[in-house]
Amino acid sequence: MSSAVQDLLAILDLERLELNLFRGRSPQVGWQRVFGGQVIGQALVAACRTVDVAGRPPHSLHAYFLLPGDPKVPIIYEVDRIRDGKSFTTRRVVAIQHGQAIYTMAVSFHRDEPGMSHQAKMPEVTKPENLPNEAHIKERVLPLMPDPGGATTSASARSNGDPWSSTVTSAKKSRMAASMCGSARPRGCRMSPRSINACSPTPRTCCCSTRR
Image (cartoon, rainbow, N blue to C red; front, side, top):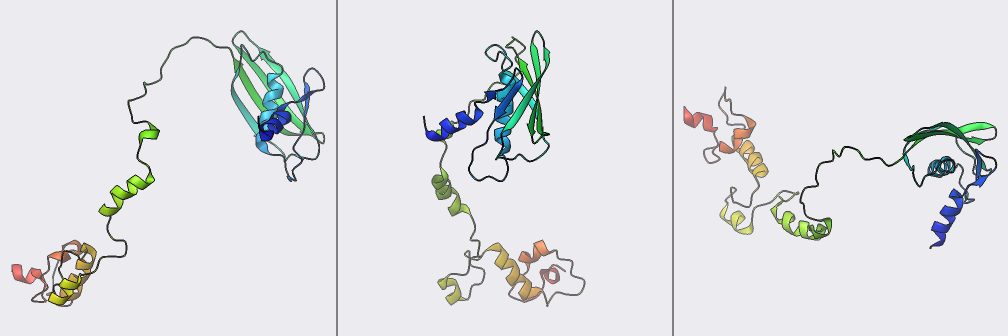
């Protein structure tokens, strides 16, 4: 067992002061405040010390942090035995420092009982270890993605003066079409921006005029 686990178990091992009173300590590592998870764990341990958890484990809890904890002084946990029923046990725990409550928790314990099963059956899916990793996904997806910087015409297209080469992206075609026919549109042209690619660049006129 590693030293970190041993330190954690030592922090959760509370000192019993009375029947319903327990004292816990905080690790002296220079913290300005007590770690909230430590208080939750110690409070739950204090409540479990008053219940036979072998036959009635905790199944729910609700808690409030009231004040910041001081790691330099111990925390007193006072357990209130609210109810011991046939199926449920209820406990309330208050963590106290400097005479003030810094934390309160209500926890319920429930014995194992047979009941209706309403969980949906797990579908047959690929196990996580059999899924493709990030490198495989990149190899398959990246070649299908467009160039984020925008493609340019190839050397052969530039030499032939073909601005509509297949290497030009649709976004660049739209910009080129807009520059070619935007100023030469006839008055009253109703071409939408999405239809700008249909303009003919050769006569430098809007295609609306060619349809009349």
